[in-house]
Image (tube, rainbow, N blue to C red):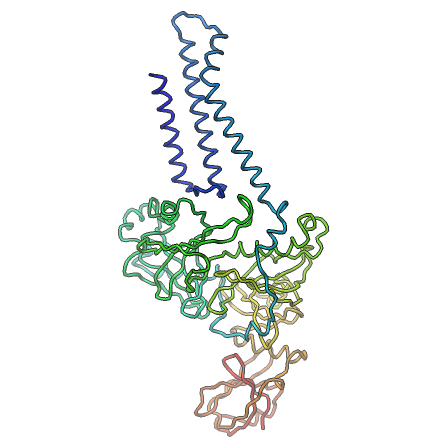
Length: 550
């Protein structure tokens, strides 16, 4: 009976350890999850250790027997009796699990399933000028994540009623909110003590940053966020979702807000299409209200359109790398590398069709410094568009932009790809050592030595269009022109790309017209109050371009 009790105690102890391990690591109870196999193997190891400890105690008792003598043969026989069945059982199961895991990993790999991996992503070749309209300033995200983090922390520092209790999470998810690209990030408890004193009311606000205007807002909630990454027990969002969906294998969980500003956690559920562990895509999406903890489970094709981040950027680029490198099998991807393509080393986000698209360049696997094109990948639907445009890599464009301001020591952010004057163009923010955006650059993809710099986006674009025109790439004469006459109400000189320009307004109009003085020297004859007649071309900038003074 004592032996049975001893084994029972060890078993209960092992179960408690296993539950503690599960509570902390939260593996999905799913054979497709590598965490599940590690959990099972850990339990088996703990059971084996328990059996060994019980057998060791039996040895100690024999060594202390009243006869005063130790028979080694009897000791070995006794130990073997106690250990043989259970030890062999646990060893056999452990080895078997290892073999299944190893064989399953091999059978799920691209080595054997190159064709299946290559077909995970459907890529459509599209026309750049048709899909990407000329730049709209309301859609250009001017801030990267690091700059957003600086603004968020600065805003939090001004919130005297909350700064001692809360900090800003480093999530800063980029989404489309009410037609604009923004970054959102919840607050988190500043410490375990601050969690203890505030968790009953929850987290009172989140940070919202407009990426086009850099306006930063701390949005206070009527009812606090009760489910978050900074909770410690069952209200921790990972634990909350795990206990509700024990078999789901969640991908990266994102923080978003709906069109009314209600905070949600977006939890994509992994789907494995090849073997046990291979060919990951997304099969379902769980939406969790961050305030109430209520969840809704959707098939990925039925997810609401306000949700922006279902497929992570890393997953999408991985899928494209499979598509681009495995066209002729696995061996070709590592040896001959014929027709093998891959994404470049970074990516950025573009707001398009009220969705967030991942942008990255496409280059050969040989590591040359030119792109063969680029792709846009929809983070909600996985739709992927390829645009065949040869030109410089993003790193080359960043270096070219930095070279224009090397005396200032500004650093280039990873570029966005925009349509400027009908030309595919890299748009780059230039930051100082404090991480603040000081200037903007536009770099022509095919002629990356053509760089325009400006203190504002509109100034940068004006300089870039002048640069294109002077190099014969575009001309204002090829654009539709309009005639207008009136009286000059305001005339302001400015310097754009080293040339003097006049920004002109007419009486009774809010339109602004840009005139390059080097092309229209007759402008020196005019002043405020002078009547004038000229032709101009409409542009996406805040002002139109004067092409001819009548």
